[in-house]
Length: 230
Image (cartoon, rainbow, N blue to C red):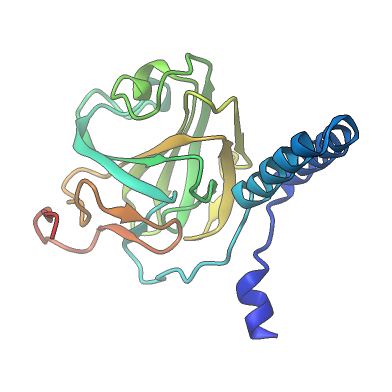
């Protein structure tokens, strides 16, 4: 049974409709010509793989900010949070996590707290790896107050291929670290804005795992960590 669980990964319900479309398309392609049908089969397998939604082991100590997305830490720099969140014009540490089409795209809550603002803003669909994607692309921005009183934000950003941001959060909602709250189809980015004085505990180029990787510790005075390829 455990071996079966390791092979069969749960599928996020947002993917059911797309998987059904891919299956139907594959049937039609097989009717046209077998080689096309096998191509459709590969694409259907990829679609199932894209919408996988595995369980994660989430650190639960107060003050830990956990990655909301799977992907590579693309940049760590000072930046002003989205203006629609009303967080002022002072730059904060921003951790940008880039998700490619092979990453798990289910997003998770980074820390316990209360959602204080949720704002959707339409925009462009530039490559999410570009720095200007954080300001120019379509996005869903969320502001929250943590259980320890810190003020942070995280932003779902659409990418070059992504055309749909799913977010189930609402203002006033109490949330818990690691809980699922949405996803982005198909390749995108999530930015995390830390509270003033909080240092990142990840390095650029590091692979982050949603619901597991510790991005920062609000209770720590440790300096920002650096990393190198070895």
